[in-house]
Image (cartoon, rainbow, N blue to C red; front, side, top):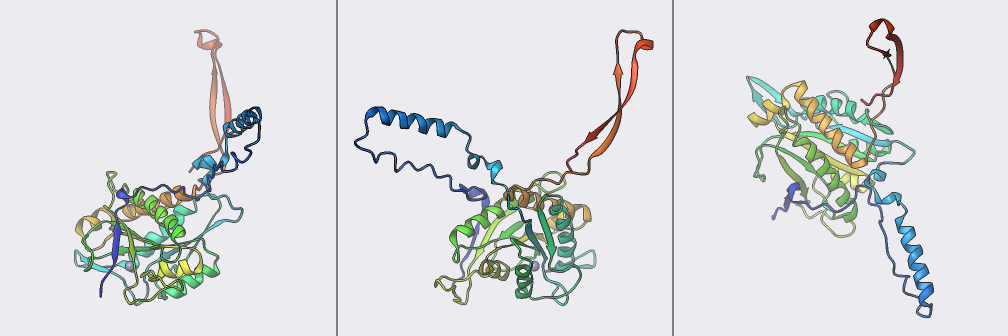
Length: 322
Ligand SMILES: [Zn+2]
């Protein structure tokens, strides 16, 4: 059986799609229809066209590409495995580390970081050590009207991969919906870019790319193309939303474990990186903190004699970003 495993290294990806896939249509196919029009008319039209294109078009700027729907962006954070399914494991200093536990800690942190953005609703598929099947998790996400499922995982070395460390995002192959898959892959690239910097000295887990994996038993979508291998990716795509899996690092790799996965502080950095990548893709806006009253003073100086200087208490309302 031939395995088709495509790990596309994101650094090699030339991404030309804008995050929200705006049309950007500047077609002028109708411009030359009036062959009988006088030259003057044509000049006038050209002038008008020029004036029109000089006006700032909102859809031209990437800033306008943020998530702008009235209803919140619903993100389902899914801590991988749970209950009797421990996921990957590794033993460090005599202690067995289970992926399901690391995933849950990381997922809580990710949820907290995502809540720091406006117009986002964050829901978790599990908040304790319970087991549930992937189809149940994606059904829950569908009930929650999720726009995005982020499945939080960590790796361990297995056959079929040349890598023994680093982070990866599992995304749609495009066999169900090519355009949508390109968007999902773009989201993955945003996240990988952040993760690769999420280490203590600015160097995070190595970016191993986007994993696009096809069904290996010949199962196809209705269009006859091979299904996506991973349940979160496939079931989310079929349900009409984005499902990605983030493999943050290898639990059984000494460097990954010690640098990125073993302390709360390290997991915090990974979670923050995930959230930053997601926020950058959707153009989310950080929630402003409550206005803070800040007290300082005015020193009103009229000459070099301190006795003539006035010291007046002042209070300012500061709108602080998080
Ligand atoms: Zn896993």
